[in-house]
Amino acid sequence: MQSVPIKQTQAQVQVNSFIKSVYNWMAIGLGLTGFVAFYVANSPSLANLIFGNKMIFFGLIIGELALVFYLSARVHKMSASKATSLFVFYSALNGATLSIVFLAYTSSSIASTFFICSGTFVATSIYGMVTKRDLTSIGQFLFMGLIGIIIASVVNMFVRSSGMSMIISYIGVLVFVGLTAYDTQKLKNMALTQPADLEEGAKRKGAIIGALSLYLDFINMFLFMLRIFGGRD
Image (cartoon, rainbow, N blue to C red):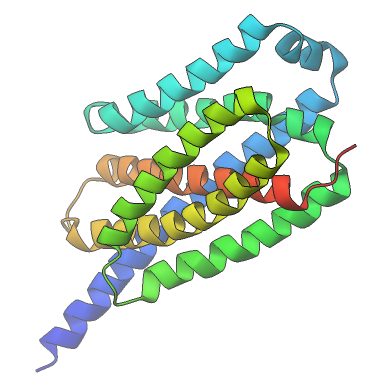
C-alpha cells in the first residue's frame, strides 16, 4: 500500500532535480547575456564595431540562429561538455547583439521591465508546472501565433508603423507567456519519463536544451515588454 506514495515521492524528487538544473543553467545564460550586453554597451569601440558595420551585426544574428538550430537538432549526438559550451557561447553572443538595448532605453526602464518580466515568467512557469490541464494543443496554437508575429515583424520593417509595432508587442507578450507555461509543462513531462538510471551527461544535455527553451521564452518576453514599458534615451 505504501509503494504508490513512495513512487510518487521519487518521481517528484526526479522532477525537482531536473527542473532545478534547467533553471540554474537558464540563470547562468541570462546572467552572462546581461553582463556581456552591459559591457559592450559601455565600450564605444565594441559597440561601434558591432553596430557600425551591418555585415558584422547581421553576421552575429545569423550565427545566433545557426547555433540555436544546431544545438536543438544535434544536442543528443554531442557530448554534454560541448552542449554546455555551445549554450554558454550562444548566451554571450546574444548579449553582444542585445547590448543595443542599453543604448536605446534608459537604465531605469530596463530594470523595471526586467522585474515585471521576471515576475510574469515565474508565475507563468509555476502554472505550467502545477496545472493538470494538457497544454499541448495550446502550444501548437501559440507556435502558429509566433510564426504570425515573425511575418508581421518583417512586414513592419518596411511599413514602419508604430501602431502595428505596439500591437505586435502586446501579442508577442501573450504568445511567450503561453509558451513559457507550455515549455515548463513539457520539461516536467520530460523529467517524469526519464529513466532513473540515466547517465549524468544525458541529464545535463536535457537540462541544457530545456534551459535554452526557457531562456528564449524569457528573452523574447522581455524584449516585447520593453517595447511597451521601456523609456527611450
